[in-house]
Image (cartoon, rainbow, N blue to C red; front, side, top):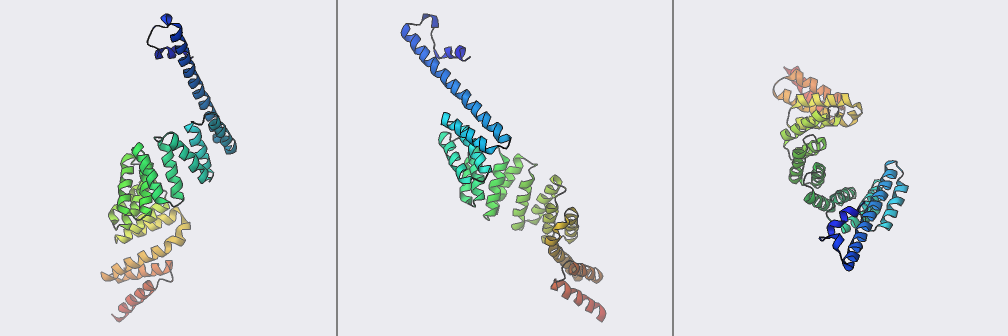
Length: 304
């Protein structure tokens, strides 16, 4: 089936070829057909491995890809897909070996850099992970996951401004990428940019309205921004969505009621202050500041 297309490699008239020209033409034709056949065989072999992998038969898939590589040592897809199976099954070192071979065969194969970045992130080799994300982004500037993941690493390394830049780029590419708002909101909060954090957690809630964690994160930002009414509402909503969070949230909620009670006390709204201090104590009986503050307000009222 490749014969009609092979004639394009000869500029003259086939019918007028001399014997030497005809021999050269047939030699070229045989090489082209061999390459085409080899390519078809490699594609079929890779497809067979994909079928096994999709069925969850990873051992068979590895054997098939290994056979593909023996048949065609230049098969980039076989190395990549075998490496991906190794990666998914926790054999990271083997995956790295296969991915290194992919880069050797095709340095522009973008997906391999992404995979290596994920592996090195898991190994806590964050500088190496960033290098691989850098290389991936050089080849593919349009993948929001790469910017999001690199932003996460920068946040983990304490480089919050750089993290925010990457996460903003991810959001620009994909405004529905919830994880990017989550990580950027955390970064803003650490940077004490509480209103920006609140905006990101609000967007996160729009995208994931049943996320108890999203409400609890926005609640914390409200606390830092001294918006205690909104903070308590968000804490309550978080617990409605996931009561199991009470162990983690109750101490924080107790502190929020205590702080709001202090605000009421400073405004001379003593009855409201006592209610909030009492709520703080109910949530955390060991909250000594709430205990002491409630007693102070009660004593003040008794003397008046």
